[in-house]
Image 1 (cartoon, rainbow, N blue to C red):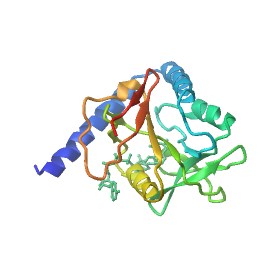
Image 2 (cartoon, rainbow, N blue to C red; image 1 turned 120 degrees about the horizontal axis):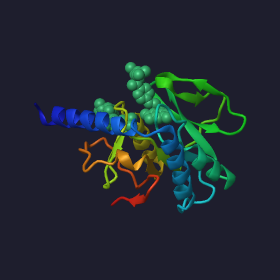
Image 3 (cartoon, rainbow, N blue to C red; image 1 turned 120 degrees about the vertical axis):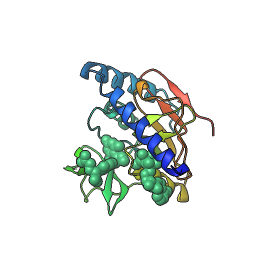
Length: 193
Ligand SMILES: Nc1nc2c(c(=O)[nH]1)N(C=O)[C@@H](CNc1ccc(C(=O)N[C@@H](CCC(=O)O)C(=O)O)cc1)CN2
Ligand SMILES: Nc1ncnc2c1ncn2[C@@H]1O[C@H](COP(=O)(O)OP(=O)(O)OP(=O)(O)O)[C@@H](O)[C@H]1O
């Protein structure tokens, strides 16, 4: 096996195992955790007035919506990812936004929603480690979107997940975009720069 294919298969195995652990949580545990997560996100020092990207949960992901409500109540503009020509763009989410079905069971704001550049990103993930390295669903959408936003700014990337998704070490590749912090139902983890 080459070094690269070894990293790939290690990531695939960590992804599979973390998603399987996530799948053992009951609906009640997921709701409780999502409310605790919201409390922790509400306690972060998010710069006032910044646009924040979040995500609309699929499968058994942690539900960021209680946290999103807190941020919206504080005046943050919210946006959600939409896939356009194989890339993520972030479209505004407010009470008027029409959500449309997208691939992979996701929904996204339709094309009439304005595009925003998030300054703070709540990033979904399958597995994470304490250094801020993450594994997503393996398509590289977030890594590419974060890399693009970094060319014109310095987005604050906050991974959000259940604590059960933590692993000892995520193998790191050059294209992986590290997180500044990770928030779970149980902790705020500050990652080394
Ligand atoms: N809630 C949520 N929304 C999100 C993400 C996420 O992780 N969570 N994304 C994070 O990136 C983006 C969507 N990511 C995707 C990741 C993989 C595939 C994918 O594997 N598609 C397969 C079909 C798989 C299936 O339907 O089971 C394919 O294209 O062949 C599609 C979208 C944007 N929205
Ligand atoms: N900045 C980038 N430019 C070009 N290709 C990239 C970039 N980032 C990731 N990729 C490609 O995306 C693919 C998936 O990468 P990886 O396995 O790290 O995804 P992931 O972290 O699970 O996904 P995501 O970032 O969507 O959550 C890889 O083949 C990688 O080469």
